[in-house]
Image (tube, rainbow, N blue to C red; front, side):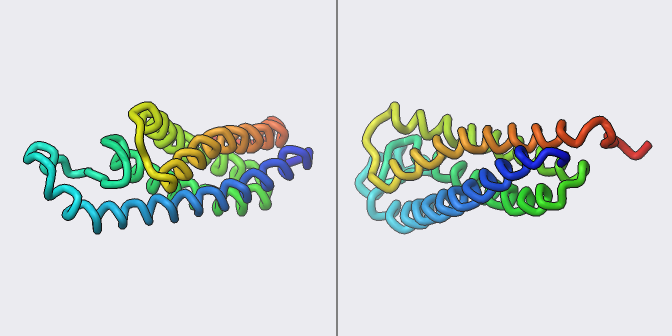
Length: 168
């Protein structure tokens, strides 16, 4: 990066996102474990059709199962993207920045999917405080990942027209 402004902003956002994605993965992992352990007891009193639903969580509503799974996927992919992005941005070469830009857009897409499920869970209603924390972090992460992708893309354009886009 010729200009150090986008690089320092991207490094800051990547570090913040790494911490937040790690927290999201940890909370989603806990919620998944809790759901696996508590579902047999909680689902025993339900009707047969509700027991056949494979993703039932006693701590939330019907959107909780999907939200927890997609939050876990988003957290793991986002943490991996942030780790590789930190290395790519510090190296500063055009090919590394292009790779960081592509992976940040993928992580942002997965985070948006989890955010949509968080909004659906909020719309449906009752949930525990740990799920509200996970929803809040997911919604915040969708914005900070967008800013991070924008900063990395600004760094790609700051490298100038001398980057190649293929083998030729």
